[in-house]
Length: 129
Image: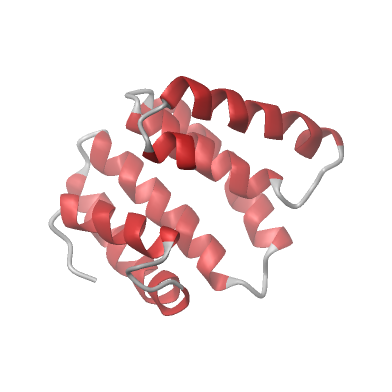
C-alpha cells in the first residue's frame, strides 16, 4: 500500500501480484486482503470493472478467514465504495461508506493508515463518518 499511496502504481501492482501467487497457491488467509487492495488500486487507476471484480472475489475469502475481525469486511466495503465512487455511482458509494464506517473507524483512528485512507475516501465522496 505504501507504493500505492506514493503514486507508484506500477510498482504497487507488481507487489500485489507477487503476493497473490503464493497466497493462491497455499490458499493463504492473506489472499482476501491482497485482492481487496489490488482491486482498490485498479479502481484508483481507472480499471474499475477489474477492481470491483477483484473485491467481489475477495468478499467470501475475507468473510471466511476473518470472522472475528469486522473491520476487515468494513475495509473491503470501504474499498468497494471507493470503486463505486470512481465509477460514478456516488449514491451507492455513499450508502456503503456510511455502513462500513462504524466498524472500520472503531478499529482505526484518523492517524492510522486504514483510518486515514477511509476518511480520505469518504471526504472525497462528501460523506461524513
